[in-house]
Image (cartoon, rainbow, N blue to C red; front, side):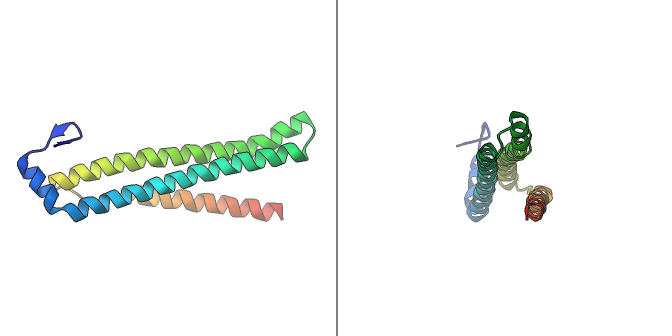
Length: 135
């Protein structure tokens, strides 16, 4: 059996079997990160497509159209980028945690969890500001 390009010794295989629940919890966490990543990317895509279409229908002047689209397109593209980055972070975090579990050196780290929470909170605050401004 191979993991990250290394052949697992019999001792490590047994340790992995003993920690089956821990490995499955790591996998569930990974999948939760992937769902979050997909959600952020989808939200960015929707923002870009919705506001681009509505800007075209409301504005006829060519320069105003470019100005109206650019802010929302940038926000949408930024969210898609953040979602993709969260996906890559999920893979990295999963692999590192899996290796630490196998080696018995796992230590909890909340830095990436706090970063995602701050990111989502910031997006929420920006959306509230936008909604208040459009009323």
